[in-house]
Image (cartoon, rainbow over all chains, first blue to last red; front, side, top):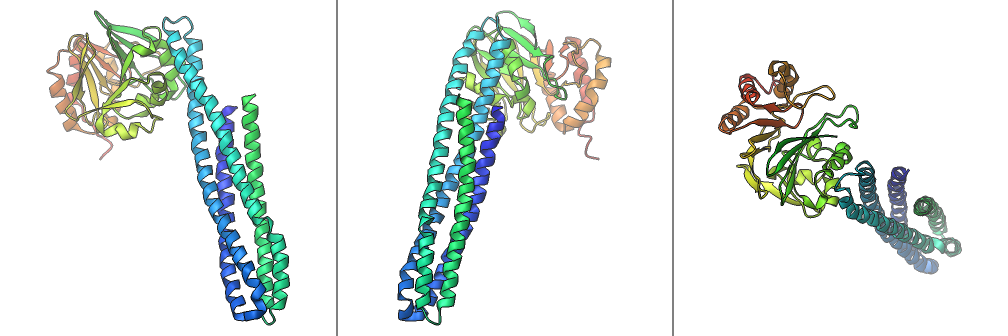
Length: 209
Length: 243
């Protein structure tokens, strides 16, 4: 039923927002951990010289992710609003169809037809807008995956650089370890969001057929 | 939905109600339409649940282009929650409603319709052949509330005043006023909050020449039953939920 599809969209938009608030939290924690790592590498002096650009890079990645989360949350909110508007359009179309059937033979029934057609056109146009919005959301999620793609290499490099920082290597290795875990979690949340959006997109495409 | 012409001269008053398709548990409502040669207004067009039945019935009498105005006596859902559905078909219609409810009524999915707010003192609507007056009926029951009076047709559309909780398929007109009292008493005592507002309204309405008093629920009052109703209402203590 179309109304259930609307519920699907609303639930998906809410789920994506919830998943992304977790992503944002992880990225924030990453950013704080990086500040800590910068302080450690500063204290370690020349021994941690190679670690400093890595911390800058991690910080940049965390900031990128947080900005993307903000954008996606706005898009997800718009998706919810559009889903609600689409429900109104679908309800109106259904009601007008009922009138056109029930009022068959009524003297002025045909005068409703232009409005019914206009509503149908609005429905078609909303379907397109919704699909575009979902595709845009998917692309933004993909941007998060791309931003975090280098994290595994970064983590390995961090470990190597940490091993040079005598006396501080244990602390810096923790940073490397945390980075790997954090990005794994981010990627998992993003993947889950992506799957949900793919499902909704598929439902909308089926509706169009 | 049943349609009954209650005035038919150089323009018509048509009452719509007693909808057999209405879902169980939803209060039955009376909708009114005044159709002149140049304009048509629907008074209290009803809730979302009866929209399809109502528009189906209306299309037997007018085209959608002829419906130029809507009137909502107050903000209740059974009065105007269908607005979002109407306005898609009537992009050029105006909605006349108490000014205090405009931003509330917009919650009923309204985006495009032009609001024509009615000031507390009342107002009028020129439909060409028919001249309508918006009679203040504040606190009867809503805090911003209007009735519609047509001097030529001698009809007062009285909103919730005169309303009765009736069984399905009740007759259109009150047949025996005394029998009607039981159906109206609790409604008026519980829904109407103010004796002062009630008595002020009665004093003003007594000045009007009325053949038919047409409430939004239940049966219509004709002839002497209008005066009987005013006398009964005057003696009734309302606002009883406050001990």
